[in-house]
View (tube, rainbow, N blue to C red):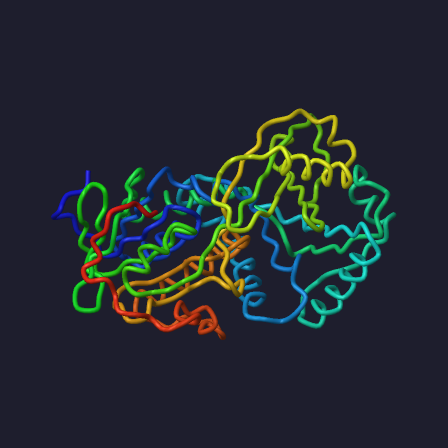
Amino acid sequence: MVHQADVADVVVVGGGVIGGSIAYHLAKKGRRVLILEREKIGSGASGAAAGMLGAQSETHRADVLFDLARQSRAMFPQLAEELRELTGIDIGLVQKGLLKVALTPDQAADCRRMIAFQRQAGETAAWLTPAEANELEPNLTGRIEGAMRIPGDGQVSAPELTAAYVRAAVMLGAEAKENCGVRSLRLERGRVTGIVTDEGTISCGQAVIAAGVHGQRLLAQAGIETDVYPVKGECFSVVTEVPLVSHTLFTDGCYLVPKRGGRLLVGASMVERNDELTVSVEGLMGLMAKAAALVPRITAARWEKAWAGLRPQTRDGLPYLGAAPGCDGLFVAAGHYRNGVLLSPITGALIAEQMNGGQPAFAGWEFFAPERHGTARQPEGRGVHAGSDR
């Protein structure tokens, strides 16, 4: 139970992979951190994610997101060891690479352009003929134009990564409260001084909103206008005695991610501005058809389950990262869309550095500024409102 007198140095609103990473990096700096999650840790988009580390799989040009993604991907090997040593949790880091499969001549041409650009950018990527792709993945359909091989991209288990971040933070002195809805911010003279929850008020010197699609109401109370909207994604998984594929396979509208125990995760549909966590027959049928077109033998696999998640997207495709304008002590980390898992290490490190009084060591940080889509307006008084946001 939270009481009126409860105090935290920093409150992290949101117990997903982004909030967990921020809490972990803050705790490493010795900060007294409280994580608030309205449901269970990792129950939102982080629990639904496939865990792909696809820094290169969809990039056609140099931009700040590409740079951020590559730097974050490079952090995973050391992070995996840190988290395993501290918590005993294996985040399932697999670095066998990704195959972006071209099913049509247009897709093949697109892959070749991507390869040319990424080589110029200093990354490794290669074109595989159909025969070469089938040699790597014998169960891949022979009816392809070829594939782009990206050895640097990989995958992790998103639920384990989220759990490891939070457990590591707790072991370093943080506290995590589940099933604790946040009603509002407490604002006094242009700064955040507390978080009002369903169970009481928590005083704090700083707060960071890392609640995916659920944080906009809180930010609006501080006069911060953001446009984070849900993009619903449906997924399913199957199980086989012998793994069907060893690489992550990716093509337009579909990906297949092999997991431990013979599991194969297939995703994901895309329905913009839909916040229903239901699974539709239409969505699953579309995914099944695409998956069977890539790996025909998947039709003989044993069904496991289906689920849906809400990706937090922004109008320009860039997450909101950094200090909230016009409200001292308030920070934002939201809108990572399909890159939340991939960007979690660098997001946590850079936000924690900024919250600790430093400057983020990333060229182009200003492109992620929360105020980039407009000026902040006046906050709504003390910000005590009904409702619950994660």
